Image (spheres, rainbow, N blue to C red):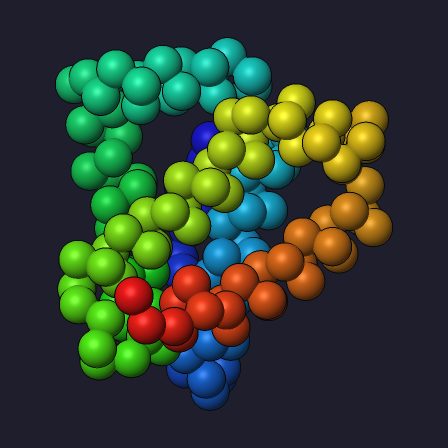
Length: 143
């Protein structure tokens, strides 16, 4: 799994926090769904994440945590003040781990959708999903 790179939610050309978050999550999911990384890397990552071992600590600190912290800050801008920081962090973590599942549990996605592979039409559906998610009660509703 490659590092998502520079976050698109930092782009000053995009006005709304929802749109910046949407662009960042879309980019993240496209990296996850890209088959450029070998399956052995996804398997290694999944094992390390499950074991929560020293290897995962390094991966987390270098790649996941910086991106996740930026996402938490972006979600905080969208969420009402009545949602405390721990709830914002949990909601953001649910999104990040759910999206990682699209890569690590690819068979569930493909079989659940009755797809044999990911095609551009499917990616368009995923884009709509992310758009809806960034404007959903998960982020904007009260606990």
